[in-house]
Length: 238
Image (cartoon, rainbow, N blue to C red; front, side):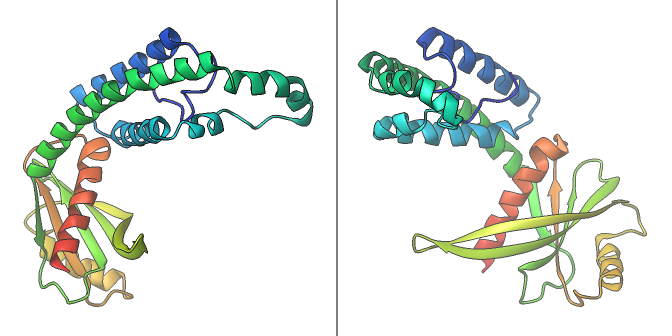
């Protein structure tokens, strides 16, 4: 099982042993991924499922609302009665509560394992400006590289700020431009100058280098961690 359905709790058979098997098979995949130091997409999935289960535990009425409801009219007529009986069955609700109580610490344990890896990867990443950084740094270029620094992945980035619940949040959008060979001629400063000449709409861009001191899986680990670290860096500098 590569992923855990968003409605895995109420999908199919509502049985503790069956749901336990489904969850543990999924978490085994997660641990195998973490053993390879591959954090994503499992890390984001774990956060979603953990928060979802906490919400359901705190508000039991949401459990009823989480049952699948996308039925055709004909199917709805056939299943309406049995469906109503199922969600009103105290035995079913008790079983779901038992599944939730079992699942929460299991998912939390995997989350903590992933968090340790995440923090380690983050600690091995350094951010530094390339050339002179302009006052406006919400748009520019990212150079992301790791040992042995033979090539550099270049991205164009844009940071957006939006408010939610009286809190300012930042989102980072990146667009891959190219992967270039790193050598004595293609220094980071020279790469920035080439980008300025190529993309005239950014005549005075900000540019940052994110350098990992160790080699990690690029797509599954380094890039997601680097992006979050960069948003944090920009937020602190603002």
